[in-house]
Structure formats: C-alpha cells, structure tokens
Image (cartoon, rainbow, N blue to C red; front, side, top):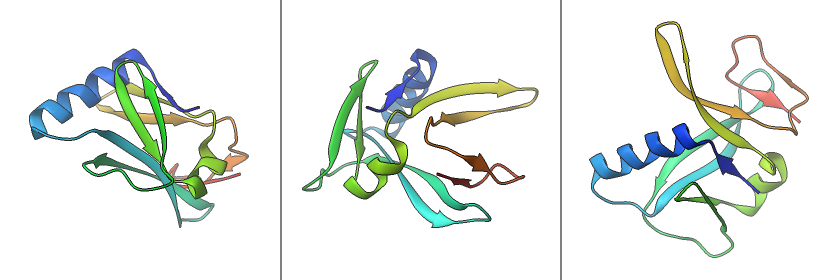
Length: 106
C-alpha cells in the first residue's frame, strides 16, 4: 500500500490540472547517491504491464514491482519548512538516509 496525505493529494491534483493530462503519478526508486536508493516521482500517461495501482485521496498511484519491495507502506506528504516546501516521503522500510537527505537505504 502506498498513500498520500490530503494536502499531498491536493498538490498532485493541482499539478495534473495544470498539466492538462495524466492518469496519476508513479512513485519508484532508482539506484543513486551515498545511501544507494532515491525516490523517483513522475506523471503517468501510460500504464505498464505489472504496474501496481493504488488509490489515495482521489489520486491513482502507480509503481513497478521492483520498487514496491522498497516502498511498500510509504506515505507521501507535502511539507513546508521555512521558505522550502515540497513532497516528503515517509517510508517504514528506510533504515537510514544520507546526510543531504537525497538517498536512503533499506
């Protein structure tokens, strides 16, 4: 299961509306950084065979089978921290993150 908080879902809805198309978002991981893995977030225009599909607060969330083993249980939130704001990933599978926060390890 992958979920979005209400505020994160609202931000995604706004971005999809601005974009004018899209079935939802894809959340996955790629190998990179000091700790080994980083989150990847992109719009979905086409569904691929084997995609996992979830729905949270009115948003369809897609992920590939390989990423699912790393992000099962993930919650995506929208946070404001001083002048910075953006999506934050809360993943119960994370064992630790690199110092800059760009990558993680499970």
